[in-house]
Length: 166
Image 1 (cartoon, one colour):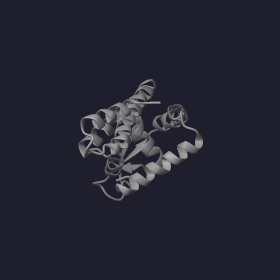
Image 2 (cartoon, rainbow, N blue to C red; image 1 turned 135 degrees about the horizontal axis):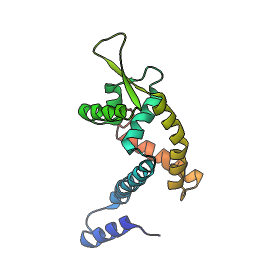
Image 3 (cartoon, rainbow, N blue to C red; image 1 turned 180 degrees about the vertical axis):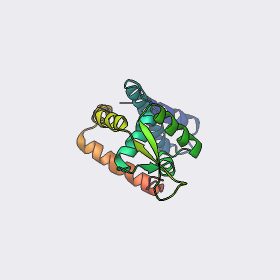
C-alpha cells in the first residue's frame, strides 16, 4: 500500500540520492494527516452548527472549568491563540448563549468564563458523537496499533517539550 508521501520521498531519492529524506516519511505523514483530520473535524462540527474552535473552547471549559469556569488567560493558554483571538472567541460564544462572563469575587480585574446550561448541554450531547467520529477516523487501526501509535506520538511530543496545556 502506497500513499502520497511515498511518492514524494521516491522523487527526492531520485533527484537527491545524497540526502536522507527518511524523516519526511514521518513528518510528512503527520503534517498531511493533521490537515485531513482537521478538515473532517470541521465538517463534523459544522454539521452540528459549530466551528471546530467553538467546540474546543466549550470542551475545555467543560473538562477543566468546574462551576467557577476559567479565566480568559487560562483559556488562551489551552487554545494556544492570541489574547485578542480568545476575546473574540468568548464574545462569539457569549452571543450564542453558550458561555457567560462572571466577575471574580476576589479580584475585580479578573473575569471567569463559564458554560451556560445550554453550552454544557451542547458539549455533553456532542462529546459521544465526536468520540464516535474519531473512532471512525481511526478505524483502519486495530486497538493495539492505536495504543502503539499513541505511545509513539506521546514520546515525540515529550521530546519536543509539548507536555503542558500552556
